[in-house]
Amino acid sequence: MTEIDKNAGVAGQIEQFDRHLDKVLSMIVHHDEISLLAGVIKKVVHEKIGAGQWKKT
Amino acid sequence: MEKDLAPFLTDRTVTLNHLLNDLPSLPGIVRNLQTLINDRDVNFAAVARNIESDQALTAKILRLANSPFYGLARKISSVGEGLAVLGLDAVHQLILTTTIVDTFKEGTGRLKIEDFWTHSFAVGTIARHLMAGKNEEYANEAFVGGILHDIGRLLFIRLDRNIFDWLYFERNAVASPVEEVIHFGISHQQVGQLIAEKWNFPEVLKNIVSGHHGGADDDKDGFLIAAINIADIISHAMGFGSSGNLYISEFHPEMWSRLNLNAEKCEIIIRRSLEDIFEGRENIINR
Image (tube, rainbow over all chains, first blue to last red; front, side, top):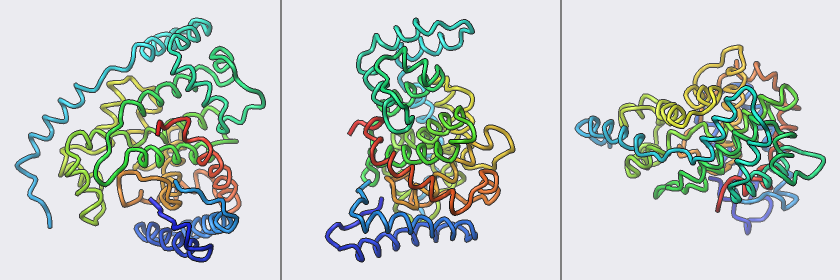
């Protein structure tokens, strides 16, 4: 489960999320599609964090 | 360090059989519904009356029918209306899902059951959006299949929660189906299949529960399994809850191709899914 520290500021939260994402995706064999997917996920989540709309799940 | 579990394996298999036998029967209302649905000349009014005899279930169905998943233009205010708009199969699957979520409430020291259902719900939601636009019937089945795909793991928790935590969380290695067989005597897909048979799941759900880590054939089940595989990876990647396994499903490029995915489609699906997951999970999960 991703624990994002809301007190970390936008840059800190993005860094935490990216660390989580890289760790999860490093567990599977690399494919170009996975890199593409990671890029899309980062784009959407960074935007949500920046807007203060990333909710704890 | 590898634990020496061999002496316990026979006992574990026996215990697992007992646990399966001890699983409660589905509530009478669900069994009645399954009988009614199997009747070719099913009477919607009779089905609606059957569901409405359970107020809590009725409230849940109406809440879910009016949630963002279905994107209905008007509010559904009765079970009969829900049946007419969503269809009998979709309502049946929703009832089955909410009943099962209510049946399994035990977590472990490492896994909160709410996190498990949050992950499962996210997989269902993303899989639904992956299928939306292709076939609405597939989309509904992808949603329910995503929620129930890992149900076999929940029986492992009942079997031995300490081994469960060790196998999936503490030993820092992939818990493949083979590892599950070594330590529990059976894989979670096989357990899921047994549960699905005991509870008389629709055939498509049985196939999803038993085959969601396998390859995808070029048929309906293949599309659904592809959607659930990709949704599982996205849900893990986005950190939605926990599947009860630190490690994620293997990626199958042919599944990506089968769903005809690209960056633009993925972005649309992820954005739509996010809103549904944030807003809708309370309708399934009792927190």
